[in-house]
Image (cartoon, rainbow, N blue to C red; front, side):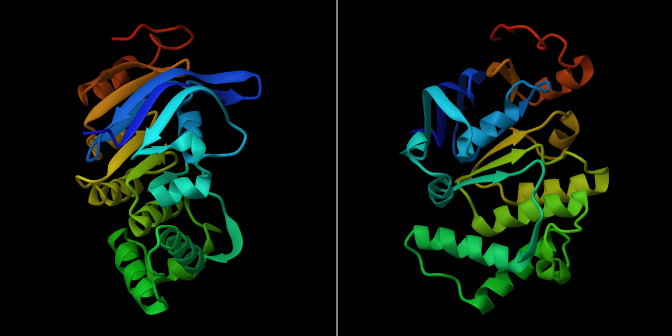
Length: 255
């Protein structure tokens, strides 16, 4: 059985600056993987390269996702194939309501997959059902996208987008950033509700506290543009105690 995501010797950067320096990672459907590591290790760059953000150059290696070579796909084609990225800092888009954004995104993906677009009534029922499960009231659907949202509201809105789009692989880039404990629990509950045998998740975080609520199958340590150690959930507890001193500023050996 082929992996949902298989990254081999991935090398990428911006201009002349190399950031990913031979990264290997395999995620099977149904698995939740967490990546931890110090600032500047390349964690967010990995999420951007996978999702197809402009400005990042792939200089070596490969990324296979559900039978697709990601390097051959534009960002929108990756979304249609089933890849989703929740941003660390979601953008505010004045003049576009949350409802309009969600409906446009959902129907664009459905069209790309050759499916019928969802009509307004069906979409509204689904959006209300998913938003209430995340503790979001209907008024948030009517507000401008992320404009005036608190940090917790922005992150819940990202999880709402994931729930609506139902991706095969969800990448969560520091979703816990800026959240208090109550907001963190709500977001984690939303993420856990999306776990399924068909879906993989890649959770990028600095801190172990998120992993108290989202129990990963595998935890990886990333440093200097590559994954240098992997283990079970106990690895996150070890990092919480010892920090990243052993990995910062040097080429750590694979464990």
